[in-house]
Amino acid sequence: MSYQTPGVYVEEVPAEPQPIPGAPTSVTAFIGQAERPSSARLVTSLRDFQRSWPGDSVLGRAVEDYFANGGAVTWIAAVAAVDAHTVRRAAEQLSDDVSLVAVIADPPPDPSVIAAAAAGAARCGAMLLVEKDWADARAAHRALRGGADSELGAAGADVALYWPRLRRRASHAASTGLGAVAGVIASTDLTRGVWAAPAGRDARVWSAEPARTVSSDEQALLTPLGVNVIRHFPGTGTVLWGARTTASDPEWRYIAVRRTARYVERSVARGLDWTVFEPNDQPLWVRVRASVDAFLDELYRRGAFAGGTRDECFFVRCDHTVMTVVDRTNGRLIVEIGLALLRPAEFTVIRVVLTAARH
Image (cartoon, rainbow, N blue to C red; front, side):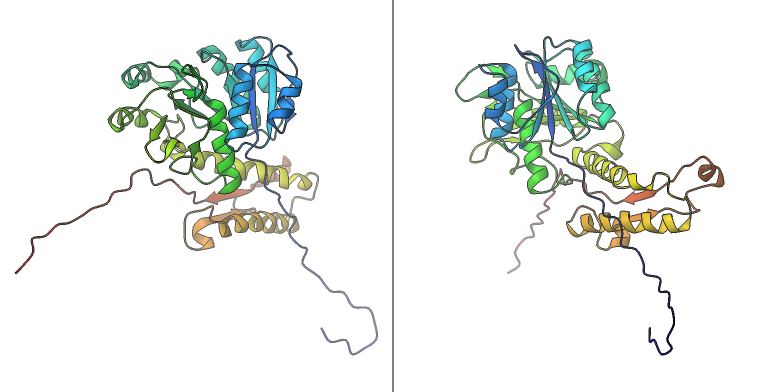
């Protein structure tokens, strides 16, 4: 604007979008028995854990495997007994920053305990990691034919199942593998992003090996049932060779898809807390769209979504098309977000066409 005449001038300057910080994704909570029960406590290293809970224990070995495989931060809920009531109470008291939960016990906890843990984990939108100690793949197949829910105690988009259990290299006894699994998932989050599948050649387990050898034919029985098989390959080592949830809905079949959606939900919900009590009208809607758009654009640039352009990857709506007069009268601000989420290429098909040579 060119100012020629003395006087008072008013300029409208668009407000900068309120930044939305990403919610934590790699924070794990372990619930397990210990000699010194306590409420959930933040632990940032194995030494930190051992200062509070010295000596050898199933929980301690799981925590050691977690840090050995790339885990960085964990909450420890040490309980006097791994039963349904105690576990549910511990899970309900977990920090909202927790995105992975595992109940540590040897042998694995019964379905009532898993059901209690799932109910508690649902409060903070965390994914529950579970394992079983089936004797072989056929036993696992028989157990799951009636549905994962009845066999495990919980199933769905926020439950991921791993088998077989692991054996530490210095021991011949099978033990919990959930510490190592959680460490690999957390490490994948930190190095590649929550939208990357925590499986494959890069998802190596450094501290242990599978307690049972699983062939490709045996895994073919289990993958459709939502079992993430832990396998050992010569030259590669022990890897997580599956990245599925136990959901029956194909939309939420993959761990990375579900956790990315949860990540966006949690981040946006936290990032928009400033909107409470703001006038619910056009100026607020513009600011909300700008904030959410900027957050999703950053994820798009980092490769979090499928699609070649922004318009193909996501959309944000916060206007009359998603809010009715009744919504506004009742104080509801509605933001509708559409995401094109990445799905892992589980089955890479290479077609080789051979033709006879012509002379």
